[in-house]
Length: 213
Length: 103
Image (cartoon, rainbow over all chains, first blue to last red; front, side, top):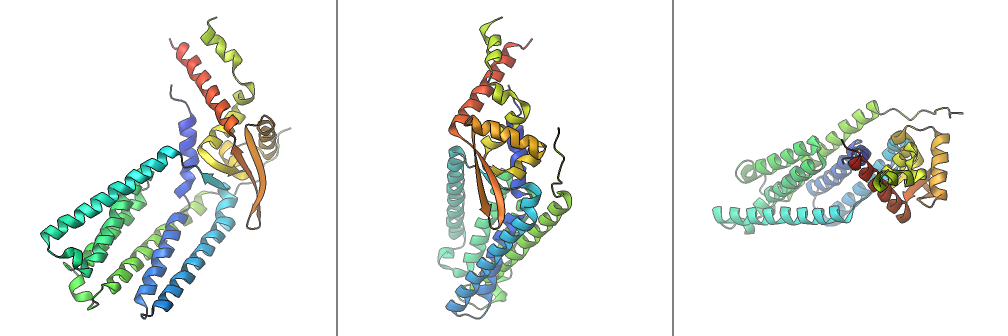
């Protein structure tokens, strides 16, 4: 017999990605990492900027949650069952295997790719893109598919096949990595921002109701 | 009346109340949820929800913790092991009953 419990569970979990805070948080990390890599090269400076950026993003997300999200849906902490934990582990293993396999395959097609820093950013972008595709399918959120596509497209554009050749003379590809992080950060923040705007429009504050006698 | 059908008479009356079964159903899929969240999901009034939560807490099926997140007070509810067991048994009893009364 199919009961309503799975339906209740599904409805309960619908809030998990409703407010877009996941993208805002991840976008914040990407954005500050990208900015730190693109600004003048002093390790202490960009490490400091990155740390300050992460703390600021954390405060902002916390403020958004307290000010706008909890008063609308309340506070909920989601449960991760042991089965889901194993599934996540298998998923990470699968993505890693696909990435390493793909990388080795590319190395056969284009020799010395593993030694070439020019391919680091495209490889990372492909890895993130594939991970986002799989995650989007698992949590059934189309906007993560779009982010995955942006990651793959950015990686392709920054590869030596397209813009990578002319974009920078930087030996270690730091500029390209910074540009990739910044692009992903801005896109994630936009995605999270639009989602949050829709959430605030469609989810009114819980009004006080009179108790029944 | 067969024993399978009679089993419905022995169903846990505390959980059998619709509001309380919905509260337990929600709490089984989350780690914890606050009062406002449960109020939104169940559609109950504050007073009603409060009464049902107290009954479930008295039975040892849930725990209620008063805490803060930042400056915001939270009334966090969690299902206990006993509550989970009782809810699973209740669901099984209902399933059995429905299966045995199919035409």
